[in-house]
Image (cartoon, rainbow, N blue to C red; front, side, top):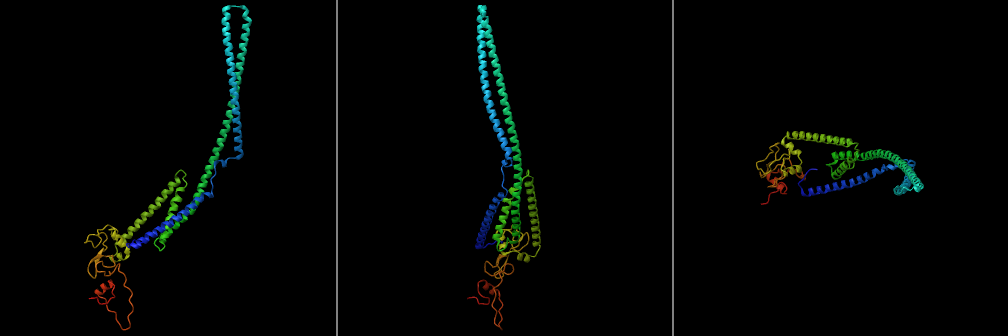
Length: 386
C-alpha cells in the first residue's frame, strides 16, 4: 500500500481503512461472543457440591441437637443459680436473726431460752445445707451446659474441616476448569493468529487488503485480549514466562528486520543512480520528498535549497533539468512544471499507442517542438498555431 499524493485516492484509502476497522470490529464481536460461551462448556461448581450430602445432613442434625441441649442446659443453670441465690438469702437472713437473738440472750442471761437457741441453730444448719445443695445443683447444671457447648463446638469443628476439604476440592477443580477453558481459547485463537500472520505476509498489499488488514487486526486483538489475560498464573510463573518468551520473539524479529532493512538499504545505496530511481515507486518518492526526506535513504534533506540536486547522504538525484525548457525540476516528476513536457527516464509515462500508417508512408521523426506539443495535447508532427 504505497503512499500517494492524490487527494481522491487518499480519501478512498481512508475509507478502505474504515472498512478494515469495521470488518475487524465485527469479527472481534463475533469472537468475543464465542469466548463468552466457552466457559459454559466446563461449568464451575460451588464448594457445597463437593460435600457428602448424608454427612452434611448428619453435621447439621448434630449441631442443631447440640444447640438445643445448650439452650436447655443454660436455662436449667439459670434456674439453679436463682435457687442458689434464694437459699443464700434465706441463710443470710437466718444467720443475722440468730446473731441478734444471741446478743439479746447474752444480755439477759436467761437459762430458759436454751431450747430456743438449739432450735434456731438447727434451723440455720438446715438452711445452710439447702444452700449447699443448691450450689451443687448449680455446679451440675453448669457442667451439663459446658458439656453441651463442647459437643456443639466439636460438631462445628468437624463441619468446618469437611467444608475446608470441600473448598480445596472445589479450588482444584476450578483450576482444572480454568486450564481446560484456556486450552479451548488457545485452540480457537492460535489458528487465528497463525492465519493472521499468513494473511499479513501474503495479502496485506493485495487488491483485497482492507479485509486482509481487518482480519489481521482481529487476530491480534483476539490473541492479546481474549487469550493472554486468561493465561493460568501458577504463582506468576506461566504469565511472566510467556511474557518473557513473547518479548524475546518480538525483539528478535524486530532486530532481524532492522538488520535486514539496513543491509537492503546499503545494497540499494551501492547501486547506480538510475537503478535506484527505477526501484522507487512514483508515489512513494513524492511522499518522501514532501516530508523533507530523501526518497532513497530516507534521511532529512533541505528541499528548499536550490543548490541541492543530489542527496548528500546517498547521492541519489533529487533535481534535474527539463529536456525542453531546461528548467530545474523534481527528478521524480513525470512532467515539467514549467512547460509541461514529458520527462524522460524514471517516472516517464509511456507514449500512447499510435495507429499504423498506410503502406508506403513513413512517420516523421518527432523533434523537441513535437515533444512539447505532445505534452500540450497536440499530435506529434502537427504545426503549432501561429
